[in-house]
Image 1: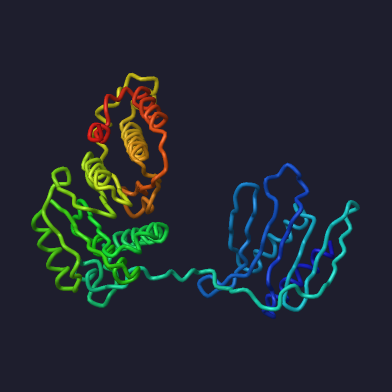
Image 2: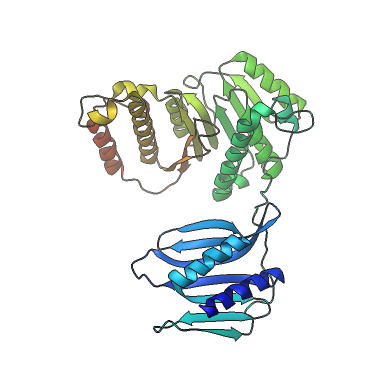
Length: 387
């Protein structure tokens, strides 16, 4: 169809002259299709011009990027086979067309709707949330030139993603930013990678007067972390020896427990609830307790007879009940994957945000009882702590 060819030629010419704004394809011929529209814009990806096509379905969008010529062929196919309305916008003119019942198509030129070009860059420039490199060098994540060491790429990504999540939570819970002193405790701090990054973010980026304490059972790591904190001038970051279950948690606004093994995660959640922490942030690990409790003879036997599936089911049940128990104590909870399994297998995060709304505890405990009955579970360790 000559008119479609004309639109494609106008598209190519507007890209060549750098006047292109966007192209939209709409009104799907197949009324039963979930694809409702395609939006096309120009993007510069890794210094190469490409066309970014957003396929807008009824419930979701799918974005695909193509080299110019490949994209133009895809657009032409969509025009011929799928859509009947086309609108091309440039800063010099607009072109619109609609294919009518007899198949004819008339291209109309109109005055431009836009006088300025949109931003072309597709690569997002991420805001730097952690500013320091000295502590990352001292912890052997970066080399002396500030480059990520070959075997620390996954750890560096994990650190940055963690701080990105903390940033979103702190910005959402604005009262934390207004505190005279923000009290933060990291239970099971380990070598302190995330503890240092958290302190760096809170003090240097969020500009909060924060006191951060890392609790860890291994004295050698406590010594190392305190030496690094002193060396890099983090005066309100301290590390001390302690078991999570035995630790006397002082007043705390934010409690963190990342990769505390098995029921140590429950101990940390319990301590946070006792302290009425505004935020409880956990990345669970191991999940041994519930796995031992699960009865293989339930109606879910087919799932549980395979070791790996039983292990994963135990993880799901454990963390579901943890989230429900936190909700029963006045926390709004979210459970999500905080970093890809490509970088770490310990990638689930439970976040609890304290609120003052009334809670339907009866409904929550009915859900917990239903789960326990379905899988033959006697008790959940966190439940026993909260009794």
